[in-house]
Image (cartoon, rainbow, N blue to C red; front, side):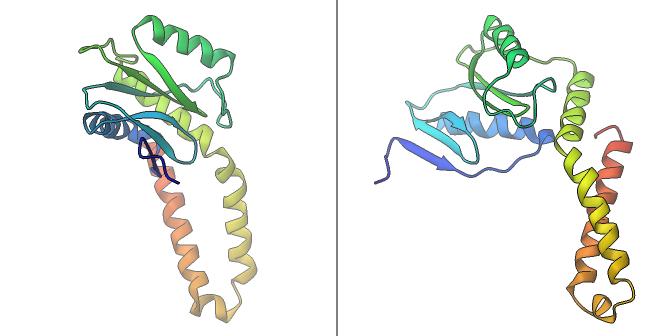
Length: 178
């Protein structure tokens, strides 16, 4: 049976959407839901509706595959605790903090450093797709190039979508992650 004091939501976000996730979590707190932790789903617990301040930060020193904080991440978390932030959870490079202080000290204040951190985190996270999916795409394209079915079926659509994704990623990084 579902617990009425808990809420489970699936939210998908990219590193460059940390600000939007922060705002969403703050809205949920105003509705009476505080983030408890996240893995595949975001798990919330029922609280009295209140104004909470969240910080969703990328810590590029962590591993993309961390499910528990590593040593360097622990040091970063301790630094944030000293600044008045309570650590909620992390998943890979993403760390989520909460504070009930009205104007908490921002964890990251320099927008250029924040942008570089997000770009570095996205590169680190997408490293597998760059090294494995692109060669598979090229191989698939050339294997099917002379096949008439290739040009008349959905394979062509998949190839065009792959090309759009690849071009989008290239432009993202050429523009400095903006």
